[in-house]
Image (cartoon, rainbow, N blue to C red; front, side, top):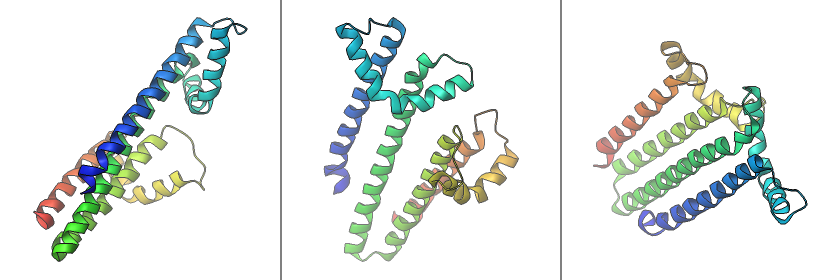
Amino acid sequence: MLTISVYPIISAIIFWATIVFIAVLMLRMIFSFSDPNPFGKVGKFAYRVRRATDRYVHPFADFLFMWRIDKKYAPLLTALVFVILAYAALQIIGNALFITDGLIVSSTAGNVKAIIGFILYGLLSIYILFIFLRILSSWFVFGKRTFFALVRQVTDPIMIPFQKLIPPIGMLDISAMILLILLQLLQNIVLRAFVA
């Protein structure tokens, strides 16, 4: 089974990549506050660290600047978003492997009901992913021809009625979080009805 054999390896790789990336970001933040001599060894190393992480930190620095918060804290926000994305990636990979395992076992056993259940579970997983991406994209501005514009179009039919019931509070969209919980409950219902 892929969930038992492949998932632990992938999760270990993502975990250690996240730890290393966060360590580098924290190092960048320390260098930003300490402002080492640019001509010394530490200063040259700090420059390399800053240059290596600029493309990840820069969008968050602009976001903090928009809210009049010191840009030196951008690595913290970058690390937080990276942890959220790593967690989401683990959930997506775990779900994909779970669905694949379920479809293989159901197909081998000839259980059509379970196959339909795993397909419905997979479709709900994709929709949950789209809502999660919508939450993240709401913090940034994207053009109309991007993937996130497609995400908005796909999730609008359900999100707009929920947002009318529970309007967003500033940057926090509680309706999206409630919808995520409801969709996960629906996934559990699908598994019990079709697979169990």
